[in-house]
Amino acid sequence: MKFIVTLLMSFSVIISHSAEIEHPFAVSENDSTNAVTEIRHSDQLSTTVFADLDGYLRHMAVGPDGTVYVAVTVRMGRGSAMGIYALRDEDNDGHAEIQQAFATDIPGTELLFHDGYLYFGSKTEIYRFAIPEGQYIPEEPPEIVVAGFPVQQRHEAKTFAIDGDHNLFVNVGTPSNTCQFEFRTRGSQGQIPCPQLEYQSGIWRFSADELNQDHIRDGVRVATGVRNAMALEWDQKTNQVYFLNHGRDALNMLFPDLYTAEQSAILPSEEMHILTENGNYGWPYTYYDHLVGERMLAPEYGGNGSIVADARYGYADPIIAFPGHWAPNDIHFYKGSMLPDEFHQGAFVVFHGSWNRAPLPQDGYKVVFVPFDDQGIPNGDWFTVLDGFKGTDILLSPDDARHRPTAITEGNDGELYVSSTISGRVWKVTTNE
Image 1: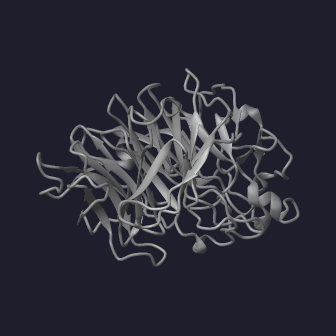
Image 2: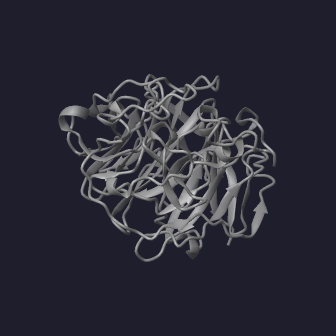
């Protein structure tokens, strides 16, 4: 079997397999708005409700003046709002009493400030807004930074990161689960080569400062084989871009003779990677199995759950792997000084939570912290920072979850903000010391 893949430069790292360590926890009973948070948190932290919005919340960014911007859309019957909300706590009581929307005709996800502009990723474009000094709402329509991304129904969110050299890295997700000839059809084989790898299923590089760029004309594909990198971030300490990839679904449903329902519930891994030039991260031909610590050949391409992927193709292994279907939706490297020292070297990861772990209970629905060593590699131990979003210890359906954490960002004083899709809530996280 011959795979046609992009020429790549291989690299080697020591893989840190997912290992959660116990950490002291506390429970927030009430916040400054007299609303129950029901969120369990590290005993060094404190959480309050910053805002409640009528919408499906996505990613966030904080402006130079402390305004919190959150992307909002309508999805799964949740909410009526769309666009971007500017949230301001004018009286410093911990709650955003000013909640003003703009760009209400653009459904999007990613938000990021760069060189005085607020960048916003829709499903098919990357925009930027000029926010006038002394104001928190733009006066003019947005400028288009990059357009021409393919219209697709699945994994359409354009998350992105901007590094210190003004490079704009954009995630272009795959429109399918595993590039089968017949979508999600039992026993259907995968296409060779997968046509979705040409302009999707990877990460593209652009200039963050140029306007009216086009995906095909101006983009440089940096990485291929990425199913959907919702969590994508540049770390200024190591000058590296990190991402977490959403793993494929339905091993048991599509190949019941090869995988049990229990195996399908916990496989494949959710992978964290360092972005490397011409990297190949394995989709759709492979998946990573954290239980055995190997990249496996996918069943659509001849795998059976025990065949290790051919190393000749140079597929990158993750620097750390988490249990399957947790859905990593955001990653953040702390820059401030408010939080305790243990949060100053490593990454916060937000897990949106699973929808397809039956017959096991749904899992994820938490924010964890992954400590790094001096080289920017996870040291192998991670711990839960925020939990309790599900609202119940045993969750059988994601529709029954009280909250689904989605994104995390940092305020100008070192505080954190965490958003939820299903409830439209934003929490403020500070230290209790």
